[in-house]
Length: 224
Image 1 (cartoon, helix red, strand yellow):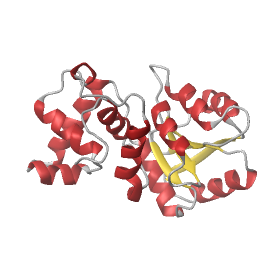
Image 2 (cartoon, rainbow, N blue to C red):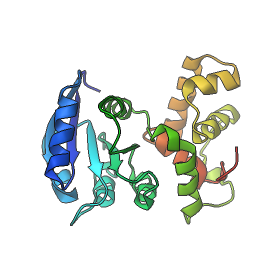
Image 3 (cartoon, helix red, strand yellow):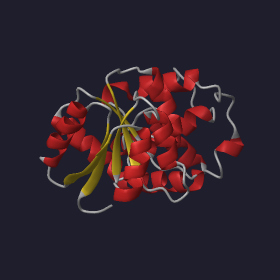
Image 4 (tube, rainbow, N blue to C red):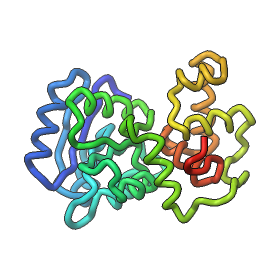
């Protein structure tokens, strides 16, 4: 990641785009490099501008945020991260956005500080969900997912027993520090495990790892 996080803002409402542009450009280490009015425009602008993070509205006319997210993140060499912005804390479309490849989810009424931190978190490869919704949102996503099934070893790759344990804790919404405390290991050790998990499962970040844990049946909705 560059020292300055390059951001593309996608929303069909001009006031929203301009508002987020002002907020983020006032933050150190963040630069808004462009705006897009819908999903198709987002894909074109991303190809032109190569942003690190795309702030993506879900509900837009034409090509919506979910399809745009899928188009942006599906290429094998894709490096852009998508942070979904919505006005609804349990918007049903958020689940599909996560499946499409979004790395984060945040409410539009988040503070400037929360928004800036979310951009930084997603840019460095750490998945992000609105903190008070992490467990509930992913669990509900998995419950609604037709892919929910009994644990499948084939979908867990060749994860070691400890890596599988770490993946389970990620899916439960624990931070690296919390996982380290639970397993009585150093936080750096947990970071190493997380990196290995993402590599072995060909996943982008912690959010995708959590979703994968539910979809593979490793973690069941409502269970700890």
